[in-house]
Length: 86
Image (cartoon, rainbow, N blue to C red; front, side):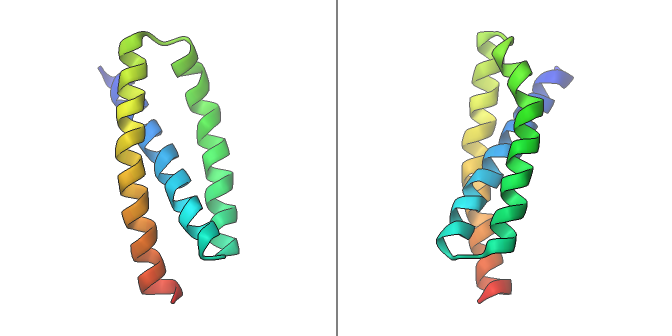
């Protein structure tokens, strides 16, 4: 169970960063896009082995974390831009 929670959270964080990265690129925030790009790649290295050799349930948990991360990343980056960068 602990491993699956970790899998969900790392997927959430990775895709959250991807969503944030897209927003930062759109608004030309170079430092933010560079930091999120680096973080995406680093987290991806932790996730790839777990998902590639995981079960179907592991893949569904990973995809659920990714879907949640999409929404969370969008809202975080939009608020960040509105509050701190504009």
